[in-house]
Image 1 (cartoon, rainbow, N blue to C red):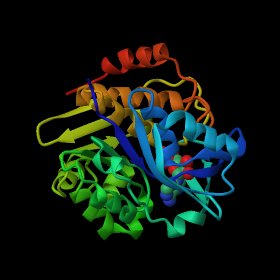
Image 2: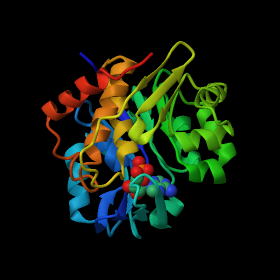
Image 3: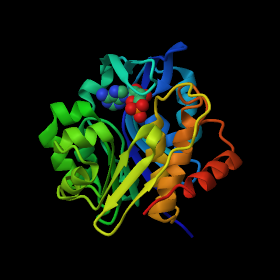
Length: 298
Ligand code: AMP
């Protein structure tokens, strides 16, 4: 029996998203939300996070339905994290309109005993000091730790980020983040510099150009699924991360896990916020998995 389970720490928030074609306010979002919905298709997921007493019922029902364990979800007096983003006409570039930390300002994650012993830990995008605090509380020294980050932390919390990277196994980041982190233009040079920071593996996400994986033993690329109509790119990276870690936790190979995460991410962008990933069928994932598998290049 597979007794693996995933622990996710990241943001939980209310997003206002403007794409070139529509705007929606107060969508239930955050890096934890997307990765939880993706990962929980395959494996029990516990989350560590914080929300305010203004968090809407719709959000509570998402967490109640997808998470196996909410013991470490803190619900406190105050305002839930809020983020606003606006996409450019090319659908790839995005401006952050505002970030209101709210209850996140005083967040001190505390792991209950069962969450100190998970087999797989996803440090979704959040301040690296909070990610490090999870590593410090974890008692399972064999846990596989996958970490995601963003430009903000590369620029404002670089030393903390480098510290948490040295304690993690797999880093997920996008091309521009890889270049900023290493100050190297060439992706393979950038990946080598990242591996030298103490990680086993780095996955560089290239948006509409797929993803590349580099480790000490192998490197390969996976293409992108040709999307007919992008509706909202928000959360694609988090969905990828959730899908990827859940597939690894189920015993799939790293190649198949990367393809699985890419399949889910390609579906995520076809809906607004989490709308689509809450409704994906297994056959839709399977179709994309088969297509993406044919694009792998070693
Ligand atoms: P992605 O599109 O994969 O970058 O993820 C989008 C999600 O990240 C949104 O739901 C936001 O709420 C969340 N987010 C944006 N900025 C931050 C931040 N500084 N820390 C944590 N989460 C954030």
